[in-house]
Length: 156
Image 1: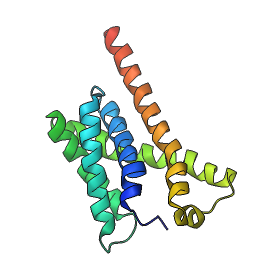
Image 2: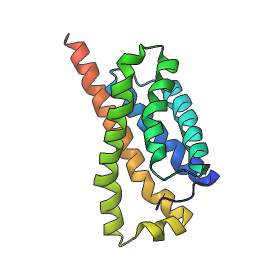
Image 3: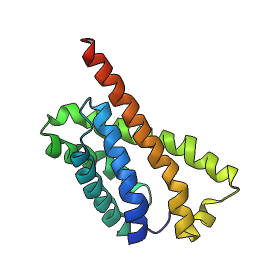
Image 4: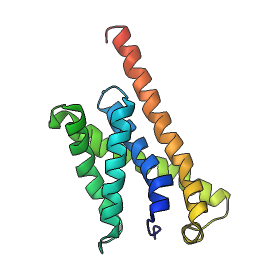
């Protein structure tokens, strides 16, 4: 069970996470990592997910909506053709986010001998255990962007 998202969760974990996902989406859409776009789309996406999670819908549905709304927000922010950002910005970013969660968050919970319920019950603990994922998402975006720039500099 995921935590009930409070404004504190949104500001300290949700928005940084959606900014990281936005950076990954831009990088995999072969677009420049532009902080204005990362912040704007990340905040709007974070607020969108926050509002969706307040609705009486099954947990996980917000992830499906993330795959739809993220490419739309990136398309509007970058003015790129929707087809060029749909798969890369939506699907790939969410797959990378899920992979990072599996490879970072769950091992961290095991290492700290924490259950999801225990972390969920403690706002500070939930936020702190979510930050390694944020750092890894930005790291993945930076590495992908670095690769893109190297390829461009040699004419690939």
